[in-house]
Image 1 (tube, rainbow, N blue to C red):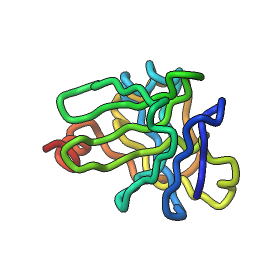
Image 2: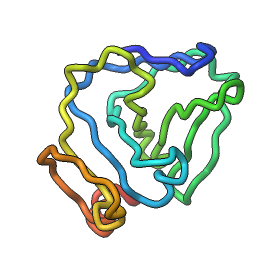
Image 3: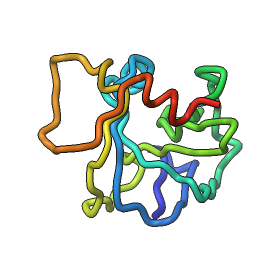
Length: 132
């Protein structure tokens, strides 16, 4: 799968994905204006145009990358595990993806909801699964 930012200066390539997740934490909602919808890339991401990437260390264990030319959100990365989560919006041909998980479900505001049946993890469950 290959995706890019709005201006095309950054291209991300990863193995084909079948599922995606949504994060409802306050930081993700502030970052993107709503839940962050993306997929995990355990086997790496090939990045072209790294000179156009700016990162922000959003916690002790993670950073967020964005294109410094157009501002497109490029990834959320767990630093200790070198695990990327890429926004599905970077990839234009993803009709085959299945919505399978929601994290920080206890932080989701009441003013929106999804109809799909997914696995749902609370903040505590997410930290138990991913925190170093």
